[in-house]
Amino acid sequence: MTRKCTLALIPLLLVTVSLLLFGTTPGRAGDRDYGRARGPISLLKTIPVPVSSANTTAGALYSFDISFVDPATQTYYLADRSNKAVDVVDAGTDTFITQIAPNNGHAPFAGFVPCVPAAGANDCAGPNGVVGAFPFLFVTDAPSRVLTVDLRTSPPTTVSEVFTRAGEKTRADELAYDPKDGLLLVINNASDPPFGTVIKVNKANGALTVVTNIDFDAAHGVDATNGAEQPVWDPDTGKFYLSIPQIGSTPSHGGVVRISTTGVIEAVYPVELCSPAGLARGPRQDLLVGCNVVFDTAGGVWTGNADRNPNSAAPRYVIIDAKTGAVDKILPGVGAGDEVWFNKGDGNYYTASSGSPFAPNAITPARPPVGTASSAPVNVSQGAAVLGVIDAEKQKLLQLVPTLNVPAVPGQHPAGTAHSVAANAANNHVFVPLAANNAYPDCLKGCIAVYGRPSSEDDDD
Image (cartoon, rainbow, N blue to C red; front, side, top):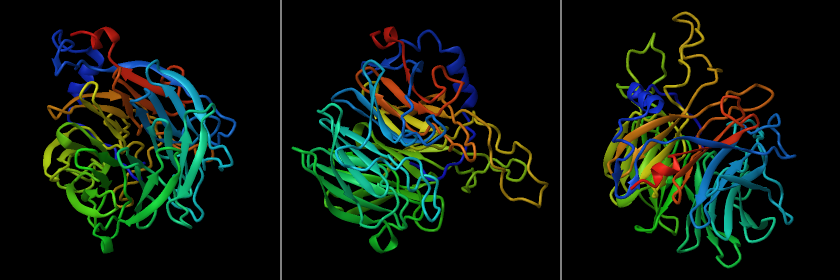
């Protein structure tokens, strides 16, 4: 889960809106590469999320985090903090199945709760990250907790838990799984400094054992000054990779860290003007780096204050080589976001870009006269985010599809941003959870939006 995000003006707005609203040329729907569907995606349906008795956010879904599709079972999982559960969906039929909560003597998930003393809004919340590797589901929580759920029982049974560091109050956040060696890399992004934990999984019974911690600070070779974000496992290199939003004191300096299965930091790949958050392994051992801050054309952090800053927004995502760290491609126009996903079914990356050109103008409502304030006002308007679609082979932005952000209501519920995405390679359906709203059908209590191509188009050869 990203800790800070800046809204982006996207240069390709006119082109992508015309694609979204008016379709494409007749030849576009039949355009295929490598036998994969390449037509534009659109909203197929929404799946309402039930409200659990444990809900603490005004009786609806507002706070949620990472999602995951297990390709072995075509099952979608969402870390749902509002309902203190993991939401489970059949990704083959787009049908809600159940909500998983800790049981078997294990304490409930933290839910959406503030830290004491106060810290970031989600720093002590949970559940946060989910990774499915049937028959087990691995879930992170606060304080600093990781659980294993056995999916073979009904209801699913919590069979193990560990704490990434004794006494750590902040949440265990995103995680990645190495199925060959039975290892998890779990990130505590809100700790100062942030740290990772290598955890051994007993592949027979799901039992967890902490192996080692990895501190991301100057003394250990990575001066992470604004958290640590999404890790991924690359089976070809046999390494973990991790997005670091900021290294050192300069906001524009971020990177991707290569980590061995023994927890050794082997390399730091610089990624500039991005603030890396999301990370996904694509074809050719490429890594898509999702950026969660938009910088301007002069290299500063873009604020949208058009009356004071003449520099334009320069939103980007970046593709790097996992073997060398070389930048393969800079992709302009996507906007700031959090989770990213590679779908091998259609050969596309998908980005949950919760900062987009569809959101209201950053200088509305009007703020005090020049000289009395130096930042834009807090934006409390409801507005759209985007689901970005990137051709992984051609390394080209294909489409921006509006999703939705829901603002916070102080004293009632937190903001719900569309920052989570996962896809099912079997049918190329893409899942984006949305906070409670009346803009989307069947979403008054929150829902999971399903995007894709009509079945006839996916089947068209």
